[in-house]
Length: 274
Image (cartoon, rainbow, N blue to C red; front, side):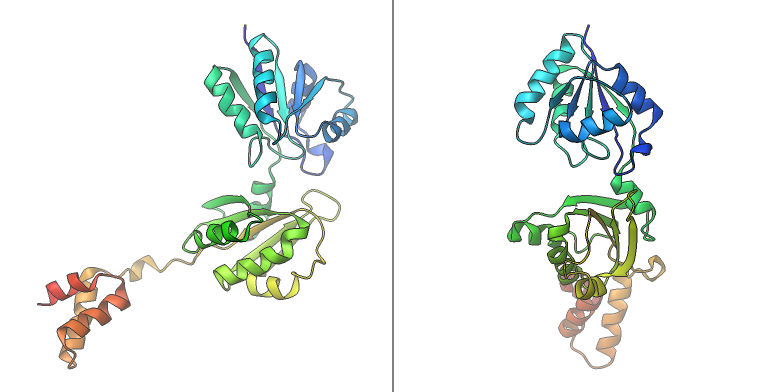
C-alpha cells in the first residue's frame, strides 16, 4: 500500500510557530525531505525529534523526486519541508507535487507560517485581491519584462527579495511604477521584525543604500482604479465629439480627440458621429 507525502509548513523565524500537528507529523513519518538538512536538523533538535532525512533542493529535485516517490509507493510516508515557511510555494517542492500527481501518490497539507500572507496582513495595503510575484530575476532584461507586465495590475503585488538585491529592486520599482504605496517587511517573526510603510519614491531615495539588513517581503500598491461611477461609455465619447464639432472642429479631428480622451477607437466614434 502506497504511503503519503505530507507538505509540512515550518517556522519562518520563530521556532515556536511550529504547530502541534506539524510536530506530530514530523514524529510519525518514516523520513523527511528537506531543502537544507542542516537547517531542518536544528528544528528537529529543538523539538527532540530524530528522523532520517534526504536532501531535496533545486539542483537535485528530478533525481531525488523519483527516489522519494519510489519509497512512498513502497509504503513509506514522507514529510517535505523547506528552510522556512510553506514548501512548494516559490520552491522546488512544486515539482515533487506534480510528480506525486502523475504517479497517483496521496498528498496531505500540514499548514504553517507563510511569509507572503503574514507580510500582506500587516502591510497596511489592500488585502482583498493580490498577486504573488516571487523573486525578480537578476537578469536585467527578464526583470524589466516582468515589471513592465505588471504596470496595469490593479491587485496588490507581493515580491520576495534578498538583502544584496534590495537597493536595485527599490530603484527599479520606482522606475517602473512611479509613485505607489510600498510596505517593506523585514525579518518576519524574528527579533528585528520591522514594517516600513512608505512609498516607492521615498524608498528608492532613502532605503537603496544597502543599510537595511535581513530577508524582505515587498508589498506594492496596485494601479489605482477609476471610480466605477465615472465609467466612460461609447455614448459619452460620441457626445464629447459632438460638442467639439459644435465648437468648430472637423468631424475627423473631433473623433480623434474624443478617442484619445476616452480610449474608444476613432473609427467607431466617427461612424456614430456621422
